[in-house]
Each structure stands twice: as structure tokens, then as C-alpha cells.
Length: 267
Image (cartoon, rainbow, N blue to C red; front, side, top):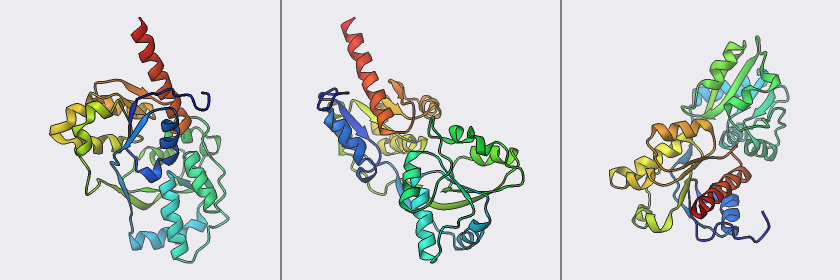
């Protein structure tokens, strides 16, 4: 893609993350000529269980492996360390689910040893050689409340003793500006979502009045799991899958989708 090329003229792209969490992607899409709208569908809040927190912070130094499943996990766990006047222990090997988490760890001064190079998800992380034989090893997964159990379940089959440290929670926004639905047909050509939870919340926000608008709009997702979930949630327009959860992969998927549309129009 050449700098300055308007590859998405007049395309209306709806991002479902907050503006602060999608600044880079917003900027790149706008530079390619698209109009970007935002409708945050998830709020991230600190979660605290004082008893669990004390136990996990004490246990950190004795862990063999600590896995961060998101940049939010890094942010909120580091807040706990700072508040407790603790430093990150030198003992545990640290794994990040992907580059955004890796960057957050680097910013926090925590050295990361394991980062997947394929798709940035649980399945890709589980393919890493360091996670194949964990017999007798203690593993802490730092995550939000109610995450998937796949990672812990498979690590246990490989011999690990797994603990969770839950440091944040995802909630439905208390107030949502629903005026976007009034001009949906004129403004929104495609919706980008980055989690199954975001898809579910988008449908809840749309409600019965606007759900048909949403499910009949092309949807861009970042994993096969999300693609399958979108089908189960009755999305019926194009479901486009980016190869991984990066801005570059999302832009590439968006470009390929637009090119396919143009080719179809020429036939």
C-alpha cells in the first residue's frame, strides 16, 4: 500500500473498541480514505478480590511460568504490584499472548520470553515449544474474569499446576449513544470486532429494534473462533477474517474484501 493512496474512499468503518484503545487503527484507516466511527461495546474495569490478590502476589515469586493473556492483564496486574510496593520477581518465565501484550510488558519493565509468531491467540501460544512439557511446573495465568478455560485445561494435561490471577472485568457500557443506528445504512459499511464478547455486546446494545441492521452488515473478525461464533450469532452478511489480531492484518483483510467487491462489480 502506497502512502497517501485512498484505497477506501467513502467507506464507513465502525470500530467497537474505545477511541483510546484503537487510535493507531483509526489513523491508518482514515489515511486510506475511509470514514471511521466508534461505538465502544465493552468497558474494562479493575477487579479486586483482596484475598485472592494477596495470595497471588505472594505466590508470584515461586511460579515457574506466568502467562499474560492481554495488555489489560499487564496494566492491572502491574497496578497491584505498584500499590503493594512490590517489584516483578526475577524467577518466573513470562509469556505474552501477542505483541500488544508484549509491548505492555516491556513498558512495565517485565522481560518476556515467550510470544507467539502466528495468530495471537490461545491456540498459537499453546504451540510454543516451551509449553509442551510442564510436568510439575507451577503456572499463573493473569487474565480478566470469566475468560476461556482452554489454556488452563490444556496446560494441566501437560503436567502444569495452574492458578488464575483475575485483575479486571469486562462490562457492558452503562450509557451508549444509540444515534448511530439512525444513520446506520448511510454511515456503516463494515463493523470491526476483536472479541466474541464484543460481538455479543454489540447485539445487546442494538436490541430488537436494530439487531437486523447489525447482522446484515459485513463483519471483520480476527480469528476462526470469532468467525464461527459470528455464524452462531446469526450474522448473515460477509464475515471477513483477518489472519491475526494486528492492525496490519486487519487492514490487509479490509483491503482484500474491498478488492473482491470491486472484482465482483466488474463481472
